[in-house]
Figure 1 (cartoon, rainbow, N blue to C red):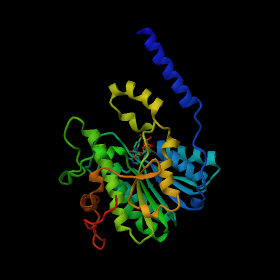
Figure 2 (figure 1 turned 180 degrees about the vertical axis):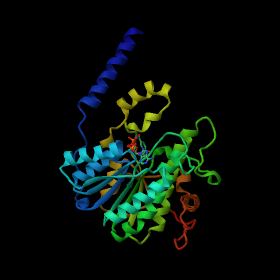
Figure 3 (figure 1 turned 90 degrees about the vertical axis):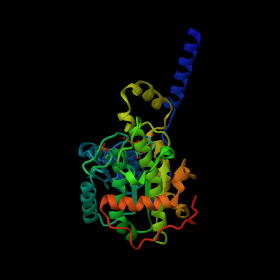
Figure 4 (figure 1 turned 90 degrees about the horizontal axis):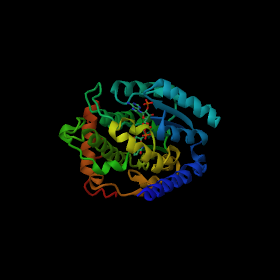
Length: 328
Ligand SMILES: NC(=O)c1ccc[n+]([C@@H]2O[C@H](COP(=O)([O-])OP(=O)(O)OC[C@H]3O[C@@H](n4cnc5c(N)ncnc54)[C@H](OP(=O)(O)O)[C@@H]3O)[C@@H](O)[C@H]2O)c1
């Protein structure tokens, strides 16, 4: 027994040494197409958003990174400017848990920034709670806030086309169940917060799908992304008793943020992806999402409900998807 434990410990130590000691950051890629273009990265103060913002800045983009916390956002922008030598990186405050803040951010951005070529809807939370607008926290931050933000910035994206929208979803969408009659309310049950997170991620995949349908012919394309399992601060709200087990596992086996940002960056900058607009990407490749995430009627109903919940008028003028819309 003692020898078996010692053997396991040695194997784990060897694995940790190989994984963390010998690991190099992903090699720099040629992302010249983004040079001089303007990108917004929501949740750019930490984790995947900070990694994506850093890589876009390294490639010469003008980057507006947003976060709720001004101290963390300013610090991230400063460190990215220093690290990449790109002075065109700025922080703007945006709290996606507040529709008022989303509107204020959008109007400040449109006033101050003449261009927008890339919108990365990355910010996310896995914690529970209710927002000032009365919605569940993960559903509003992960979906509704980004839905409103995208609508408010769409005209600018269209006037700067070709342009792209990348929505950071998750494979957790597979466990999502959208209840349209109670959209934005925490689901019942003992795993309500986890279910809420999964529901919001299903909404992310459906949002990209429906957006692509509505944007056909505009040269604005959009993509949903699963970044992989990544060791970030997303899990800081995990149950206290789970942390001693979960955090070492995450450290050992999960990707780091620069690796996790690769699929987002692929969808943001890789030429020739236009024919995949609306699709779900994982490992830099289009993948088939869960059956509900391919349901165009559900995507359409979610769109209309989201419009109502964020206070936008009904989607008059936008083509509604037919049942024959067979994007996979
Ligand atoms: N990590 C994973 O394994 C994983 C897997 C699948 C999908 N994802 C998705 O990847 C995205 C990024 O997550 P991450 O892992 O990088 O998490 P993270 O390290 O916790 O970073 C989250 C970012 O979102 C921002 N944010 C949180 N609440 C906000 C709010 N109310 N308004 C505006 N910004 C807010 C945070 O900014 P503040 O500084 O203001 O807190 C932070 O910059 C999320 O959409 C997540 O669902 C992650």
